[in-house]
Image 1 (cartoon, rainbow, N blue to C red):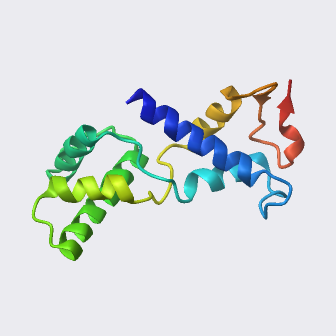
Image 2 (cartoon, rainbow, N blue to C red):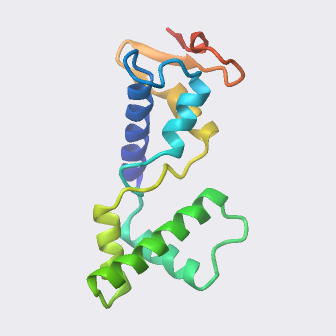
Image 3 (cartoon, helix red, strand yellow):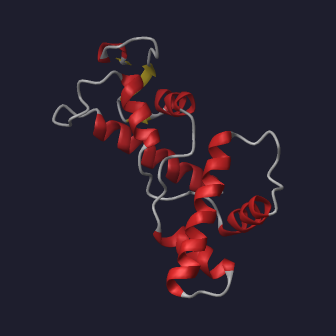
Length: 149
C-alpha cells in the first residue's frame, strides 16, 4: 500500500510541476490554483490495492462506509462502483471482482481523491534534487510565493 501512496504522490507532484512550467497554459495561475487544478482533474488511477477496493466496494454497496469517511473517499467509491457497473454491462462480465480488476487496471480516475491542502503539504515536503520547496503561501495570488532553498 505504501508503494501506491508513493506512486500517487509522485504522479501528483509531476502533474503540478508540469502545470507550473512557463510554456503551460496554467503558468499565470497562483500556486493554489495550480495545485487545485492538478488535484481536481484526471489522475492516472485510483492508487488502491485490489483487496482494499473489494472491501470498499462491498461497504459502499451495502451502505456501510464509515460515517466519518472523508467526502472525497465517498466520491471515489461512488465513481469506482459506477465504473464497475458500466464494465459489467458493456463487457458482459458476470463477477464484480473481474469487473473491478478491469477498472483498477485500465481506468483513469476523474481526480486525485485528496484535498488541495494535503496536496500542498506533499508539494512542500517533496525534494527535487538541489531544490527543496520550502513553503507555498496559500493566501497569495502570485507565483512568487514559491520559495526555494
